[in-house]
Every structure is written in structure tokens, then in C-alpha cells.
Image (cartoon, rainbow over the protein chains, first blue to last red):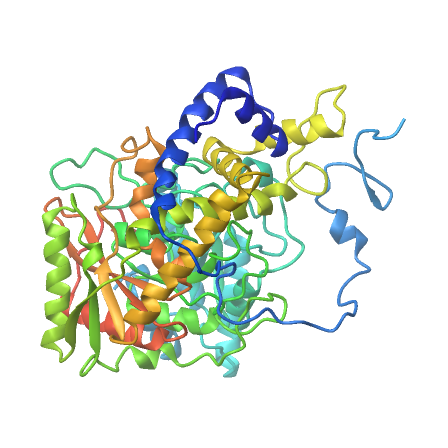
Length: 95
Length: 495
């Protein structure tokens, strides 16, 4: 499979990364190089194999559905680029 | 003896015997950092005042007889571990001003045991790289150099290049590191030190900036296998805040270093004999197996048939998880924000991420986004997860026959800063021997075992069963004893 420039643009848009025109051609070449290299995986017979999703062998633990943290708005907001009161600030979304 | 030349264990003994104080140890390391860091660039942030304050408090505790297992020992912390009140960058511009309000579990465990933190050490951006050249804070230089070509500056490996370079250059007694595809073991090998990636789940991932959550594991680097064992004992342990943290007892890893290898069966996977591997690495591997036979182990050839698919599998799984994990960096809640005067929210996201991420991180986010996108998920991501299961099955079957597996740590010694930068796939091949242990969730240790013709260190890797780090330490210590590795890098503190 080979990516055309339109697909590179679409993927960048899905990933929310702004690309300059000259970056698109470079990335297209690099991504196609990587995808051509991983193409060898298609040769492996994986019929009947269960996919391995996590790194561990045990099932994920459940915990009690209770609040364990909170009441620290100043800490949560301390690194915010913009804030208004106890809220994160962003450009106007709704007119 | 210069205080920076202690092993970690030696330093603890000297502290206990009153031969040196933590303030003296810490100051000697800070002096080394001041002298060498402008060239090596191993530290991104040096917390000198805080370190001396911690050292004074430690000396006071020792006087009162309440010292912890690591009390007064100066360490470096990879800048991927959140440290409360100290900037944590992940080597990225996008986190260049991020000051965590909380402490990672692993670094909190070290503080609990009395450790002194000298500062935060450099890494490839978001731990993505094998050369520590992708950091937004500049590349790290390897303190070693080639005998016949001393002017070529070499990479320390990556992503934990700052950790490995700092420890090799005697700018810390040990360091925390993380390993997603080889990021502890490859830099340890390149810098002539030891490093272990423990079993997935052994160390809590809580408070470590996430790269690929099903592969990431924290571990230590230090100058001896036993020093790694001492550090891992403190770093490891069950943590309810990480749902993948394993609720298993943490054994006395240091004691396991003295177990010996008599009667152990050591596997040598035939698929790790790669075309193009330098003959001196092949020879060192055979030498390592001979050392183990000499100490009473039996070596057997084994087969891990899916080995050659491990790297391409990793380069689907890791970027996929990264693209998801790194979605949080959007310029809203923390980190960098880039926006034009008339930016709407979407434009703010796109400009922030374009300005905040470097080229390797963008490449991996793009690959990850693509393999997870509608229509390609099954062909790439699901396929890779199935092959990952086969790679793990290979190990399960091998460990029915052997107790540990020994391989080279890397396919080459450290390379020049300008080498292998043209093609991403060439750089990825650095992790060919290490990535399998991440995919299978197994512990892997890199131990310095010899020098190449240029006088550069080469490492061997020991892979063990899940949660059997003890055997891994026993085998690693046996190799270390036989190798009697005493070479030191040209750039180091105290000379």
C-alpha cells in the first residue's frame, strides 16, 4: 500500500498536525518507506491466533467506583496556557 | 578514591561506615556535572540546591540511625518521570514549560528510600529514538570515543541516552530509565554500563510520560549488575494507581546476583545470528556463552521463529499507542500553545502540535494514526497484535527448555552523531535484539562484556521468564564477573 499526498493530508488532519507543503512530500516518502518495510507482516500466517492487546499476562484489575482525588483546581490549572476562573481558556467555539 | 568512582553499593557502604557524607558525594557529582555537562548535555535540568538539601537531610537521618536503603545516594532521573515542582519535559518542546504537581510512583519510591536527585536527564523526544539525537534540548554525547578516531562524537544510544551517559561519565551513581523497544538496554550497551528492563508490570507506570503503554517499562541503569538490582528493588512494587501494575512480591534482587549459574540452561536463539552482524559481536556472544559454561551452566541452541517480524510489529503497535497517548498534547490544559490571532480551536490544536513535536514524533503519530484509521485497522494493527502473540508464544515454548536466553545487546557499537540519520528504518534496526522482550513483556538485562577494536563497549543481553528477574540478575552477574570489564570512558568526572 502506498500513500498519496491526499492521504498524507487526511492523516495529518486526523492527527491534528498542521503540515507545510514541503513537509508533505518528505513525510510521504518516509511513511511509504516504513509501510513498505512493515508489509512483510502480511506473509505471516495468523489464522486462529488471538491478538495480544496488553503487555501483561493478567487481566486488568477493577477498583471500587469511588472518587479518589479532587478538590485541587489550582494544581490542575497550574500549567494551563490560558484560564478563566476555574476553567481552561480556549478560543471561542460557539458564536 | 574520588567520590564519583564509587559503585552505588560501594557508596552505600562508605556512607554507612562514615567514610564519606552524602553532602560530599552529592557535591562531587555536582562538580562533575558543572565540568562535563556543557559538553555531554546529559542533564536537561540540574537541581543542585535541592540535591544538597536532600543530602544534608540524609546525613542527619543517618546520624539518627534511620537511614533508608538508598539514603544519600545521588541519582539522575530521566526527564520522562514526573517530579513534583521540577520541570519535566519528555525531551519535547511541547512540554518545555511543564511543572508536574505530582511525583511519579517510581521516583517517589526512590525518595522514600532516601535517594538524592541531582536533576533530570536528557532523552529522545517522548522516548522515541535510539540515538538521543531527537531531543528538543539537543543531542547527548557519549563519553566514550573511538581509539583511532577520537574526534568523532558518538551517540550514547537512546532513548535513555542522558541516563546512560550520565552514569558512564560518573555524573550519577545510577539513573532511572525507561524501555519501550530497547531504550534502557541499547544505551547501557553503548555506554559500557548495565541496565535492566524488568517484566512488564514490575514498576508502576504512573507519573511516567506515556509513549506506548503496553510496552513501556521503567528500570535502572548503573555501572554494575548488582547496583541495578539494588535500584530495581526500590523502584519496583505494586501500585494501585497503575491498572497494569503487578501485585507480586518484590524479591531481594541483589541477593540473586550471587546465586551463580550452575545447572542453569541457557538458550541461544539461532534467529539472532543476523547477516551483517560484526564478527566481534558474534565472537563476544560465543565468549559469553563459554563463560557461562565455565561456571557450570549448560547452553542450548533454541529457535524463536518469529524474531524477524518483531521490529515491523513494534513499528505498528508502538506508533499506534503513541498516536493515542500523545493526543492529550493539544495546547489547552498544559504545555505549549501556538495560535494565530484568528485561530479557532482546531487551528490552535494543529499549530500547537506542529510547533511542539519534532520530526520523529510527528512521523510516529502519523504512522499510528494511519494504522488505526478506518479500513486499515485490521490489515495493520490487528495483524501486528496477532504476530505479537506469536512472538510471545515463541518465548513461552523456549522457556519450557531453558531458564534464560543470552543474545548480543545491540548489532553494533555506538555510532557517530551524523551517522544513520538519513532513513528512519535504518535507525529502527538498532533495537533488533531488544524489541522482542518488550513485545513479550519479559525482563531483559544488558551487561557490558567487552570492547570492540575501536575500544568501544559492547554488551550482552540476558532475557528471562516473566517475573524471574532473579535468574536474569544471576546470569548477568556471572557474565559480568567473567568479563571483568574495567575500561572507563575518556570523559568522566574526577579526572
